[in-house]
Image (cartoon, protein in one colour):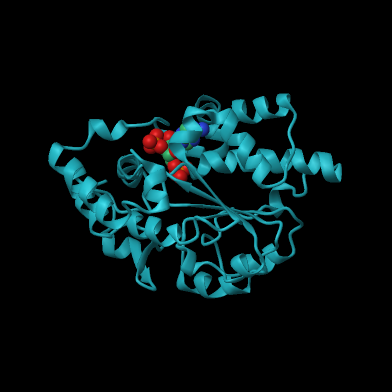
Length: 289
Ligand code: A3P
């Protein structure tokens, strides 16, 4: 971590939110409006470290099953045609290429709703909103920041905690994320799932996700999707899917690891911030940690 660049060189600000220069650029944000979102697109919205790679595996698998059944084809795209699935990560030519891709497309994003292309809402694409206990998000983000060179690293957990609580994170503040997305929580095109509920009952979670996107599954297919998306399976496969960053993305995969990091004081501070920012909201209640 010692030879990493300063925070200020690694991040840039766009519309008041910080992003890593290695992954995003103002040009890409400006070009994003040209993306033509379709009503059958599958949108996965989740703040970093809420389990977006996990849900990505589930959604990819569901779409593969769907295409095989409905359109009787193996897979709509070969590897070269695949776009990096995160909407805001890539080059400015990305959206023109994506406009030519066949349905059903899966788009992942860490963005606030106000920074997404308007056609997502206008064309009524279905959005799966993934949320996770903020304490585990902070814990996961801390280890991730120190393991990923494009992100600022932190000497100590205490340093990270201050940054997390004072909105200095790439992709912005998680509490702001929750309060902004909360306005969409009741929309019929939005389904919310928590990391914790999916972890507790993955069969039910996958079943509900498939139903939401209109994908029917046999009992066997359901079991297979759950098995292939288990933490153990994904970790085992991570060298292939995530290269040298495999271990950084698939760390512990559990609930309540925050208890190994938070001091009593930090715990109280976060409870208080949570209560003030999202307590009593739909998403806040759903998180009930
Ligand atoms: P931890 O750091 O707590 O282990 P993202 O994919 O959004 O970057 O989120 C990463 C977090 O999701 C990590 O949390 C990671 O271990 C966890 N994760 C990844 N795959 C998972 C799976 N199949 N089941 C449960 N958790 C998973």
